[in-house]
Length: 136
Image (cartoon, rainbow, N blue to C red; front, side, top):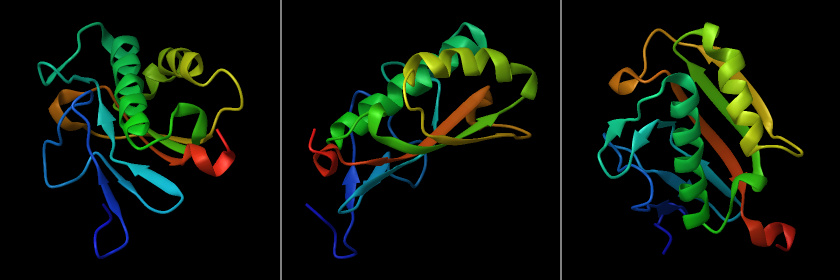
């Protein structure tokens, strides 16, 4: 159901619950805008152990679940933004990221930030198309 503002709130238990006054994602007629995801395990709401690679894998898995709950998926991502606590982690993050976007990756911006929620090393947000738009 869409709100009076023409947007639909997206929520799934397969990704971490919002830890503030925001939605996991917002769906419009053609696009899904996700909130940034950090490497929280949805079951424990704790950052996964294992450093930047484990956190990046958890972030992208969380985003995958959010997008799927909105009738989309990672292959429909058109733009992502990656926030890193340290650019020293760029290569390791990029290696895991490429596993999730092996073909026709989305446009992307990566920036270093001073800090992330819960001491996370990486946060990623994205914009995706609805899969029916492309006939999938």
